[in-house]
Image (cartoon, rainbow, N blue to C red; front, side, top):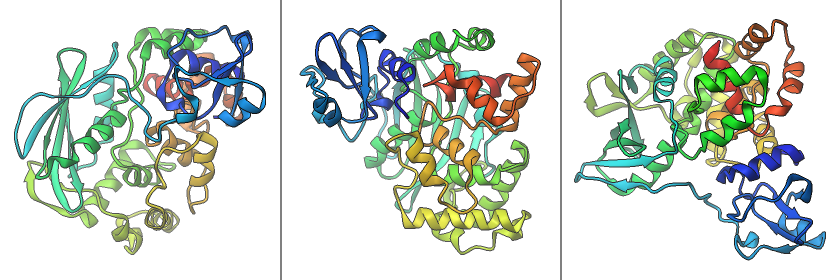
Length: 377
């Protein structure tokens, strides 16, 4: 994210760990600089300035906060809450994944249901189930609501050493690191979004299980409907996804690896050759850089890296940043549904550039504003 003062200050108020390391807050009245997740009382907006690095804050004459140790920004960003192993033995284990209330589980399930790829995902009235693969081994994970403000995940997998990775991915998919009240309070300052937030105060931004899978989904979805993209994804999985050794009902495949799609004739699945070429380019890029879809140093950096891939433009890059990289300020402003939604709410048409200007006050939570606009469309 850039160092827009109001956006940075909202991030500080939220203490959202996703902003940790993105910038540092210097307090003019104390001469101290801190990380965005510092537990100290939040200073007034007029009393702070923001710097991109700890070194820049030091050069400006500020000393480090001892409480949050700015020089020791972790590589792995901490997430609120604690994951608890409830019960089970090899090859099945149940995990509690806590979250902060409120949580709009019906809307989360509906979002995933509309995008569920046949053969690898199943969504019922109360749970989400998908096939998973790690290091050639296969299994399934099922997620439902539990008591005690948590989701319950049932992992069936031959090697339970993957549990930490599964937990991290599920927290990303179901957006469990978010404080929805802080985000809702900020977005509700906008008269147009206020009613949407009031209707769905626990709305989350659904994440992605795997970066490569999400990138392929995003390219498949370029300029076509969600339903059409799902049908194409189903054909791709049926043609190139490895079959499960132990199928679980209609879950009979796992998602194909980049090495397979990079050399496949994807146009044969019934899509324009330009889109097939883009899919091949994504697969080749994923092979060349195994960290391509990891969280980056900021939204601008993420968009720049993704747009270097042939066939990946601004919309696709923003969508990947939003769902996979968990960039809370990602905003695919050219999305036709977003443009139609805001036009319906305000009674006037917007161009993408006009929508970007209109969304300036939503920062640093434009991804959540986009989710509200998508849901109400």
